[in-house]
Structure formats: structure tokens, C-alpha cells
Length: 161
Length: 158
Image (tube, rainbow over all chains, first blue to last red; front, side):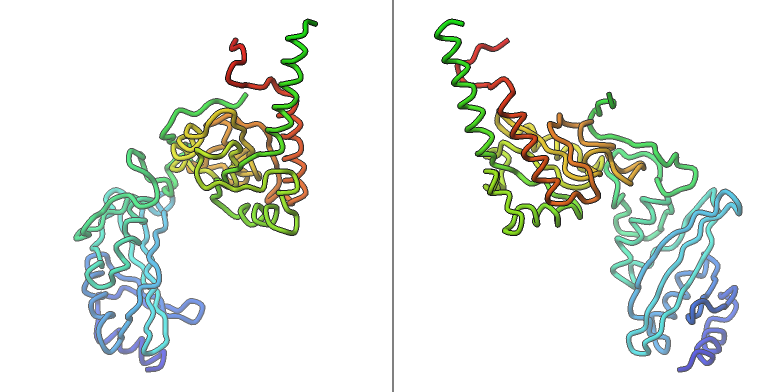
């Protein structure tokens, strides 16, 4: 399946659930609505697309300018040796997305990381706890609103002399 | 100076000499400075020439704590516990820019120098420091040990 036929296939199979298709660094980029994220992921995981690997799941904070968070998913198909990037926007006031842990097992920790760093809630996640920071940490450090030098020590710190 | 004072001074000198050449070190290694530690500890630069070659992997048997690399706030209680488990007399070397001051990491996650958590005797800057600098720092620590007031079992406590 060539690149043009792939995009054609995505358009016919997934239809209006996809908001936009573009290309970046030679790979197709899909923009989807958060409501149809899970159904699109189910379709992409199955034949004929067969994206068996979830390479990465990250977040971007656009709250200051555009009032939204963005989730970026990187998929890879072993059988066809192609990659796909998928983006979805969440409102800054209420960032909630569907969990895809049922499709890719490694999404478990990736979603925990995004929750820890950005405060995005994933509905359907089996155990949505902080991953990188520690128990008792308040706030989400990769949000632009978080003061970047605000440390939250677990034990008393001496001041510099 | 009475005879007893003379003997005490001699004893202190002997203790300092013994302690500075028999440092058992505990490497608390968290980051890339560990590569330079390995280089300094192994045959090319050979920290054993200065009597600090016996690496202990239990803080209870060590008297020199080498903090090598970045210490985060998540890790700070662990470092404090390791230090508390060491027996007196004990010394600490902050190895590399991150352990000295937080280094390039001025953010929410990293402790801005391990002297905010535990006392430090010698700071070795550099990102990472050359093994020669590590050995220089070690020699400076030995000098400090030789000239400090020695703590021993029947010494008068202030």
C-alpha cells in the first residue's frame, strides 16, 4: 500500500472522523476529534492498516495561546514498514481523552506520564497514577502555568549560605 | 606542653595519617559522571594509588561518600538515608557540577547542590570532571583529614 493509497484508504474507511490529513517529514499526519479517537485507533490497529506498534505518546501545552492541549500519537506498522502521526486537541479547561491501553499495552505508562506531566485524564485507564514525580507532588510540571523552578522537596532543604 | 598533650598530638597525627590512606568509599552514582568515576577508579588513573581503592557497596562499611551525578528531589531522601547509615568518621565528596550545584538543571526536579541535604567536604566541579581533578580533590580531602581534629573513642568531646 503506497502513501497515496494509504491516505485514500484512511479517508474511505474512517471518513468524517478524521478532521484533516497532512504530511510532515514524509509521514502522514492525521488530526482527529477527541470523541472519535478510540474508534479510529481501533481501526488503525486492525487490518489493513495494521499499526502494531505505539512508538510514543506525548502532550503539548497550547493553553496560553490557543486554549488547548494536544496529544500526539506515533504509530508504526511492522508489516508495512510505515509510520503515522495522529494528533488530537483537548480543551484546556477539561482535558479528558479515551485511554488506548486496551489496544497497546505500553500506552499504560505513556498515559501515566502524560497525566503526570500535563494533567490529562485518560478515561478507562486501569491505574492512572503519577509516573515520574512522587506521591504528594502538586500540579503538573510540564504545563506552561507551572512555575518552572518551583521545587517540591520531600525532606527539609538547607538554604545556600 | 605536658607529656600527655604531646602524646595526644602524636596520636592525632598517626590517626590522620592512617585515615587518609585507608578511605573506603561508597559510590552513590546516578548519572553520566559515573563514567569518569569508573575511569578514575580503574587501572588508568587508579584511585588505589592514593589509598582509596577499596570500594564498598554498603554505606555501613564506608567512610567516604562519593556523590556522583544529578540528585533529584525524588532521590534526596535516599541520599540522606545512605549518609545517615555511614559510621563516623565520614566524609563526603560532591563529584561533578550537578552534585555541586545542580549543574545545568535549574528546574522543579533537581536538588540545587547536595549540600542542601548533607554536609560536603570537597567539591569537584566539571561536567564531568577529568580524572586528574578527581584525584586532586581526593588529595585535598586527604590533606583535610590529616589536619582536622581527630575523633576517636576516648577523645574529649566538646
